[in-house]
Image (tube, rainbow, N blue to C red; front, side, top):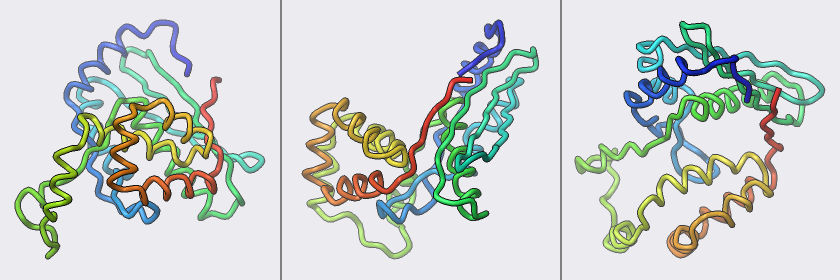
Length: 211
């Protein structure tokens, strides 16, 4: 990450904006984990108004070179101060579909990381007893939920966010996490952890670069 010579004004503005941001709703299906995640539109929805209100804007510019897609993301302030980061990943081929998917992926993670947006579960339907005809949680599921360690959901979201960075990154995040989080995941949803490892093994290497 690089910044303008001074960042006092942009830092102040970002701190105010973060206090006004909501979490990004997980409203897109993830076929690998049979779960949902916050897509790019949801991340933007969570931060756009707060950023604009505090004189902040985000500029994202992709480039492609030698099998690698790079996303430059700049957070700029009306004062002229700025913060910039580069995020890149290797792609298997240069087809429009692959390049487009990689670009969207990089935009989403770069944006939420730079401005501080965290994904959150949209469980309003469950709370109201709705859910498109789905049955309510079983007693066993409810008990498992009640035994969930504090902060587990956020940890799981963070863990899933590094899956596409490959096996090494996933293992590092796993080993550096709290034992009770690992125990809860493997005891209540081991299949999900196995899916993460499978996807990480086949994922392109995602790298953060300092310009």
